[in-house]
Length: 247
Image 1 (cartoon, rainbow, N blue to C red):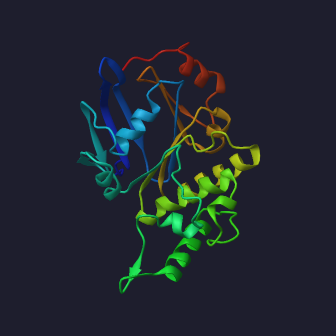
Image 2: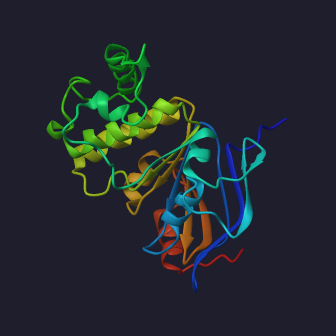
């Protein structure tokens, strides 16, 4: 018997006043899979990510996690269901070190005191899982490159033992070397058995790591593609509207 998808969304619609941000969208992610969500500006990518994260609630449609129907009215509920999100604003505290940032707001205490050595050991483990190139968990975030900061933000999601991680434009504004570093971290998440939603404008980055590419256009689903096999031109045509699917 085939296991249900980690995340299954059916007929999701979301409006902001007169603006229809999502219209009858279907979306799935499996364990051990990287699904890229692509589209032009205002395609609905970030809105869908925020629905998954519990920031926005859809007006219609259903959401299932591991085959179980759920509602995600708040981010805390989504997190409790194993969904973690890294938005473009990483919200890192530059005056703190890597360990403090990873556990910011979820500090581990023993006998009422901060368990600093234990948190540092855990932080080192999270970074190793991601194959991070950060010299020490004690390094101040202000000393890190943009790619290393993205790694810290991703490592922070592992504190909650998630099943699904949503990454909103994680390679935006990075150098070539930093982008390659972050793509390695994303592949590491898949190797850990997690599902990953990778939102990006950069098809080169997407095709380097994704298993599947899902296209949104003007809030509608407009094509599903195999990242390793389908032609670049086919994906571009779906993004620009040269080919159109109506669901």
